[in-house]
Image 1 (tube, rainbow, N blue to C red):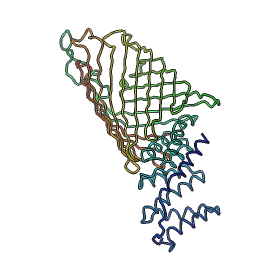
Image 2 (image 1 turned 120 degrees about the vertical axis):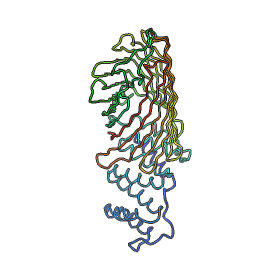
Image 3 (image 1 turned 135 degrees about the vertical axis):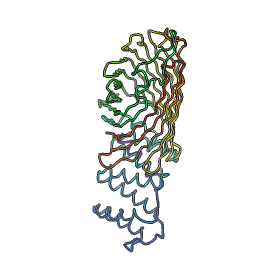
Image 4 (image 1 turned 180 degrees about the horizontal axis):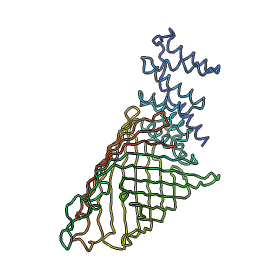
Length: 438
């Protein structure tokens, strides 16, 4: 990784400077031209007077010229990094990109700094944005290798998100007054009808990677839960995956043993044991494809629901310019069950478009799913067939300096239409929270 970091640094140096100092600059407030201030700051750095150099450069960040402001921020970022303040360097690079987002050289420098700080996900995002702007072939080759190496660099890390979540239908239940059955209309009880509420949502994930000098072993633990005052609707799921992490050329492979557990209303709901295989390939500096296949044996609280699960998901990510990116998703799932009426096959197509606006990111995602049961349940007159649509609007705000927290706001609308009223529902959910990566 050290060699690849050096290679990326060389790639940064090979790029044109993000901004150049004009040969005939306007006078600065100190009666020195901007070019003279830059030269003086460079001389102070050479003398080891980093604080004095920083003071001069900060003054130039308020210059009327965008080129001078950008050059000052770029130098301040490198100055902060030289002093070991990687978070400060990242802030200066981001401030530069807020005003001048199409600089591949700054994106590469930002990626390198994120990598040194141990934030591999942010480093990969910066690399994809740099690739979308356009890189020379030799630089792109180094970036490809560096992007792949990022995935096996950190030994430990994770993220957590805490949200307040008002929800129109916390139990995803039908809004119908009665349900058709072979015995006539059935009136659902209170827990089987749509119930609104405000709860707390928690999402967390962590990983540990061995450092044995050979093929590393990666352990990933993730969890997601929704908690309400009425505990009977609490929903918690936890998953653990453990296996080797392999790299071959431009690909990364993660075979793993998998175990998941889910609790609903505080009681055990389901358990799955099996395996998963994740394959990721860097296609270009601006794009990647990820495929994950899972097979697991499930045991549910209701024995009739127990059976094998098979899932195949494909994600394609691409950056289009520095501020725009999109993801296309396809998924196929097979859930077996002892009762054929509960066994289902489903498919989903979806997409997400994200746009960076200054320090904020706005995104919209949508998906459409089709689900079909194997046979008719004995209680109902028809076989279950569903069409489900999901639309999500989100806003990710820039990280706060305090505790490095990132505010997030999400609004999701779900509509599930089914031949069986029992499974038809509508849901509107708002999440307002804070997230942090470690």
